[in-house]
Image (cartoon, rainbow, N blue to C red; front, side, top):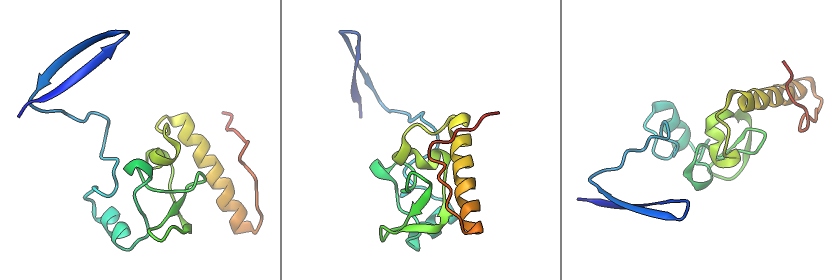
Length: 125
C-alpha cells in the first residue's frame, strides 16, 4: 500500500509516495493508547483521562489531573510532556522548571494551609 504526501515550501509544491510513515515526534503521546501497567491502571480506574486532542494527560494548567468524571484531583498532579495537550510546548527544561516551581509552591501552600499565588513568578538561577 502506498501513501501519498504533499509538501508545500514557500509557494512551491512537491509530491511523493511512500509505503510507510514513521512517527518521529517522541514517545506515544496519546495516553489512551499507552501500554504501561501504571498508565493502564490509572486509566481503568478513571483517575486519569487523555488530554485535549489525545495529547498527554488531561489536567488543569496548574497540573491537577482531571479524571474520567471531569473532576480535578487534589492529590494527583503532572507536569512536563504529559501536559502537552493542555499547554502545548512544555518539553524544554526551563519550561518544566517553572512548572515544577509553581507546583511546589502550590503544594507547600496547601500543606501549610495557605494559598500562594505563583501565577506570575518566574524561576531565576
